[in-house]
Image (tube, rainbow, N blue to C red):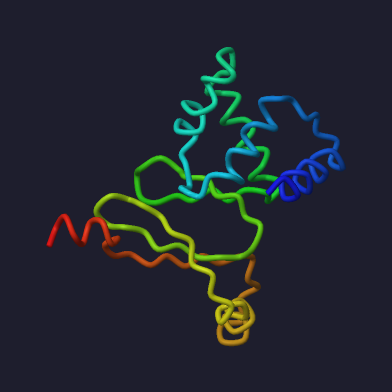
Length: 143
């Protein structure tokens, strides 16, 4: 895990970004956390260790990480954006009841952008796949 953090920090340094303790903490939290947290959830978790850190600091760092393509911003409907450290291309299964998000790694879709280009002529920039349903917990509680 620390290798992934070190690689991300190195990318930031190469881009001339100063590595503050708060910036490091936000990035490390995203790498360690697989729940796709919102900015407010990240802030609440890190405020214990960094009581002087503002919510704006978290948002500014997330904007920077997104711009540098270290993190993906996941927007689902009207709810708050969730953030995902993106080390490899993957997709998401989202619970329609509780909102839980699980990563799906499916290499069979790696060429979907090429196929889309070939079928439509679009110059594809990116793609996203979301699967919606009920997670195992919600299946049990809403049976």
